Image 1 (cartoon, helix red, strand yellow):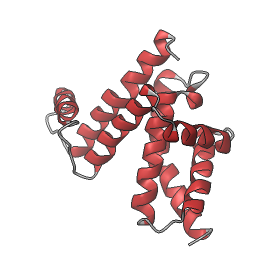
Image 2 (cartoon, rainbow, N blue to C red):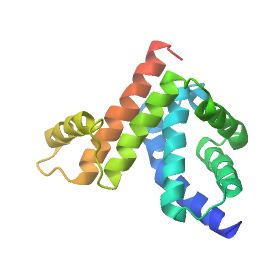
Image 3 (tube, one colour):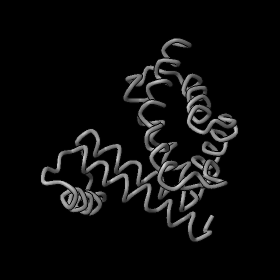
Length: 168
């Protein structure tokens, strides 16, 4: 599957994640250091892995996944994808884990799993808050509205707080 399958998977993963970045950038701008922030790397890195596995049906080799990670971070950031991916891998394999990296990854897990119809006990409280938030904006709260509210709660809101407070 080397080459063509990886490129096709990369394009799909970028297509799935790019809107999250675009919305945040449109609403708040991308602050300096965005692509080096531990929370961002945890959240986006997990989503890259999740969408890679779902799209490729686990058929990519470890080497192909590494190149896909470089290419995807590069396409999303318009920066050096290899450097960003290397920082992601460093954070993902460090012990103990950086707490902000772990929070970003955990928040992404809740969003990704909800998108495929799975809700863990850990994420139930977030889903309930997202359902309430979605209901406040629409009489019909479909899965996409709840997912949008969940992304707001678990990605956009924490980013606004992190970058506004100078905690990075």
